Image 1 (cartoon, rainbow, N blue to C red):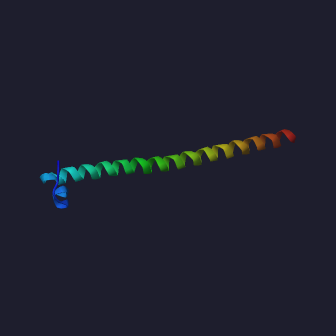
Image 2 (image 1 turned 90 degrees about the horizontal axis):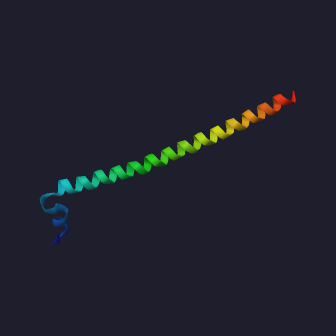
Image 3 (image 1 turned 180 degrees about the vertical axis):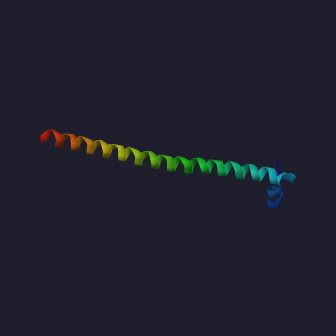
Amino acid sequence: MHFSSISEFLAMGGYSAYVWSAFAITFIAMLWLVVSAHFTRRKLFREIKNKVAREQRIKKAEKMENTL
């Protein structure tokens, strides 16, 4: 489809509401996926860090208990 002007392009032959809303919904969904993945990744790394620190504290306590 060829458009002779920018306004004609934006109007999309009378279907602009459908076309641009589809683009907006797709963009928002993709942005949501990226943001959600980022926060999930941060939460997962925080949980792993806490688990490793807890395991180290447990080992240290066991070692201290064995020396008494």
